[in-house]
Image (tube, one colour):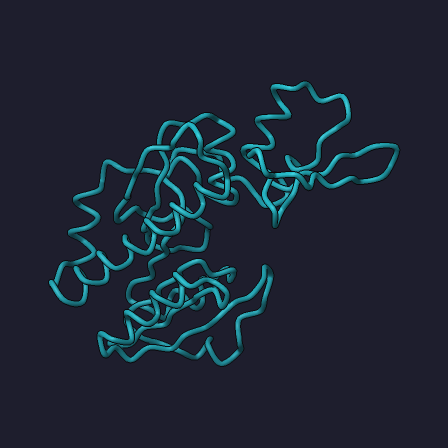
Length: 226
């Protein structure tokens, strides 16, 4: 069984997913990304095999590579309500009750293919973007392990997954990273309610909120109360 795995070099869950596939004694090649808009190595375009998996990868896999596999699967760290970028932030900003992760068939569009399986969990009133993202990634790796075991050990077929989950569909806005970044910039006249929502949903140590004032940007540093 030949497998092509697209992962994230800095994500331990991505490394764990790759390691699990290796332990199944599959003929696997790993392709690792570190940032957005990276170029896929040229030699990967000549690969052909059975499965492509993408887990937390920054690569946007083109159709010409997807077509070289019988089945291509992505694990998206958000429920079908939140395709695209910034799912945890938008879920908290929307005051959603539930969140999750989604396994789906990959096609030439991002977070668009037929859904194979969804794992959902409650959003806590105290959740922030940081805590919700962590829980989403944890559930995503569990979902990956479950699917890999079903596919490669238990002999479950992709068609069976599709049949069991044919009630699931993408139903949210496909947000882009520039829309997420825009929400991290606030104006000095922002009201308190909106400010607190933005802090809870879009502020983190790695990606802090920024204030625009007289043409300059000021970064929110104190995150202790959030």
